[in-house]
Amino acid sequence: MEGTELEHHTPKAVPPEVLAYDSPLAQLGVGKAGKLGALVLRLEQDKSNGKTSVKDQYSRVPLYTQRALYLEEALPNMAYMYIMSPSGGILQGDRYRMDITLRKHAFAHITTQGATRIYRMEGNYATQVVNIDVGEDCYFECIPDQVIPYRDSRFYQEANLRVHNNATLLYSEIITPGRVASGEHFDYDICYMKAIAKDHGGGLKFTDVAMLEPKKRDMKLFGVLSNHDVVGNMYIITKT
Image 1 (cartoon, rainbow, N blue to C red):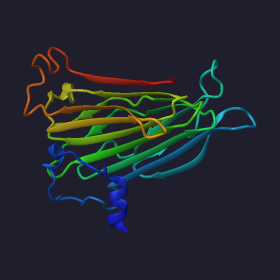
Image 2 (cartoon, rainbow, N blue to C red):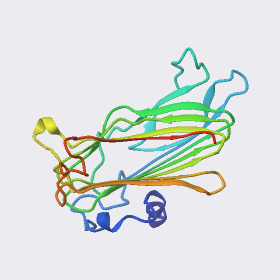
Image 3 (cartoon, one colour):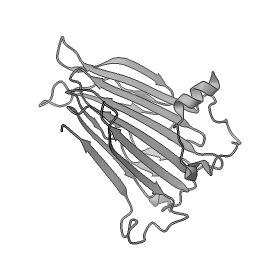
């Protein structure tokens, strides 16, 4: 059962650049208690009041969410939710997975309580799978705070974005150079972010990859980041 759970939380195809850091851990091994984080959310419009509400929810620490809030006067049906983690960050060997589904005219905005901190790693790496499925006539904003990769960290994230041709998704990613105030500036091993977008028929909309390996490639080179420090992507998939 443990092996099946580990497979469920792990990306199907971890890139070889990340797998190169696969090694035994001195601490809790991959797949042990506390190393697998899960969040499942299904959001739908409630017929009784027209608001978007949570119809199905499952959390496995260190991932969980607040209840839905309704903060927008111009869009009273729009649910705002925060993804939280009591661990403070992602550790070596962690495998996280989030499955977020919108159906029946759901409108939602989801963010995180703060930055995603990727801690220093002496063995192995960490991964996160984000599966988003936006149904017909739904609108979703997934705008997490920035990723902060600490010195010697290794992180791979795969975002699978499934969006109906008559729906809208706004999805963003921000990667900082590290804990600059602590003297860390592009000191991590690898931060690999991959986004794959498809329609509900399985048709590919795009694939986008940001692979940052500052110890192997100078991030300040022209054509890489040049005089910039932060990598930011905003994907807008809307009606065709």
